[in-house]
Every structure is written in structure tokens, then in C-alpha cells.
Length: 382
Image (tube, rainbow, N blue to C red; front, side):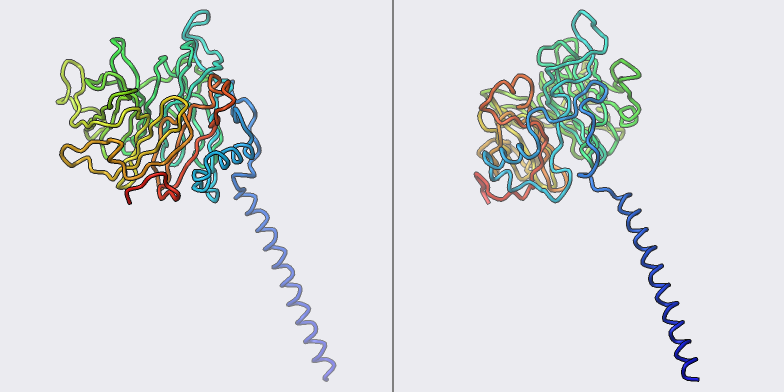
């Protein structure tokens, strides 16, 4: 009788053991399949060196070389990069070559390949895309927009524009799903044009072989040239760069559809609702929570990031260098910046074909992002 009971117990334990082993196998298979679905960004297969005639690889350095040079020359900047959040950097495409439309004969108006594109503007679209604008240094090709995947940093496509403008300012209106691009009209006056997110996603340069169509265009009464631009709380903030004297910043209030108000227009020109004096040599502007961010750069001297508490509603307030609450020293040739989610995205033009000829320059061939709560400030009023 005891032997039979012992035998039954053994059988039960055997069955339990088999069940546990099967559960372990199922769990292992599920884990492997699930991990495949959630492949980390850094394990993505490398992109081809060229996609539709636009280069996707860094123009100057490997990632290791870039990190080493940045840490050696700008250690405070390097310490404030967020290496935990991927991607840490966005490789600027098109610096080696870019698809574009020929502006000058022969082949005027036809697709071609530009080797002298110079990045100028930066925009982020709904945590989905990062957009970089660029113009042809020789004015041989029309300007372009490069579209990158915001979450991976991978190059998506080139968008051809129908002008040779500097495109120094681009910004995205997340409330109305519209990208604004700074341009110049036929009378050589500042103009801003817009295109919808739907048109951006639908556009295919390889198939269409022509520039994207803008939905709206508005001529501005001021400034005469648009050097930088940003969208914030239903207003477009548009500024003018000055090499020596102070610059100017203008605010244009938009209507409920995100367009310029007709009652603020005279003789076909839109008039600003507010304006402020700024420090000279401003290249970019952005807002982040309660801060205003300005980038300054000129020549091969170090750039500066100026951080101000937002006091634009105060009378006689100016965005001068002496009023900045924080000043951060950065590599030369910084262009547009974006403050978003507590981080500052920064674009540089120092890795273009023209500047790559200078061996003494750090060629910033990537967009970098810093924490707004920067540690190791060059100057601070706090």
C-alpha cells in the first residue's frame, strides 16, 4: 500500500516538473519574439551611404571621433549631453551630396546633385520628424529640406524647394499642423510660406521630380530679411540678424486657422503686433516653458546660447546680452535651435564642404541636444 502511494506521488511530481519545463520554454520563446519587436535604435541596420542621391553618413567623423573631439574641446558641453536617451545625435544628411533642383543652366529646373549644401534651419514635427533646411552656397541649386525620423535619427527623404533663398528660419506650428519656411519674394522682401504636414508626408522627390507646393505665402512689412523664426502660442516670432548693431524681433499674431490676420495687412503686407530690440548676431530663437533661447554666432569664434526668463510682456524689455540669465559657450557656426521637453536641439553649419577645408575647426556634422538645466555654466545670474 505504501509503495503504491509513493508511486502516485512520484507521478504527480513528474507531471508538475513537465508542466514547469513547458512553461519555461513558452516564456523563453515569448521573450525572444518580444525582444525582436522592440529592437533598440542603436541595433538598427546601418542606412545606405546614399538614399535617392542624398548622403546619409556623417561628413567628417565617426561617432567615436566626434565624441572624443567634443569632450576634448568643449568638456562642459559633452558632460551635458544625454547619452541615455537615443538618439544622442542626429547626423546631418546631404553635407557630402544632396538631391536638389538645378537653379542655373545647364539643366535649369531639372533634378540634380548638389555638393555645397549649407544647413540653416531646424524644426521638430510632433515627435515624429526632425527637419533641417539648407541652401546651396554657390546658388547653383535650389534650397532643400531634409527629413529625419525623430525617434531613430534615420534619414527619410529630401524635399526640394522652388527658390535659392537662405531658408534661415523654419518652424512648425503644432496647433495647426503647418511648417513655416522663411523666403524672399520677387521684390526682395521678407516672406514666409507654409506647407501642411499632410503634404510633407505625401511628397516624393524621386517620383515627382519637382519642388513641393506651398499652401500659403505672406509678405512681411518687417523685417526686410528673415534671419530666424519660431512659433509659440499662436504667434510667429521673426527676427533679423545684424553683424554689428542690435537686431530686431517681431511678433505676428495668427488667426484661429493659424494664418496671418487680414486686418493686420496693408498693401499686401502683414504688420507685426509687437517688436523688441535684440543682441546683434542672433541666429536662432526658441521658447521652452518659461525661457527664451537665443543662439548667437558670427565667424569662427565660439558661439553662445543665451537663456532669458520670458519677460516679453514687460514694457521696454529688450533681449540684450546683458539681460541674459545664462550664457553657454558652444562651438562656432551655430545656427537654429529648438527648446523642447527640457532639452535644447542645436544645428551647426561648420561641416559643410566650404568649412571642412579648415583643419582647425571642429566640424559639427551632427545636431546635438543639451539639457536646459545645464551644469558648468560660463556665466549665470542665478
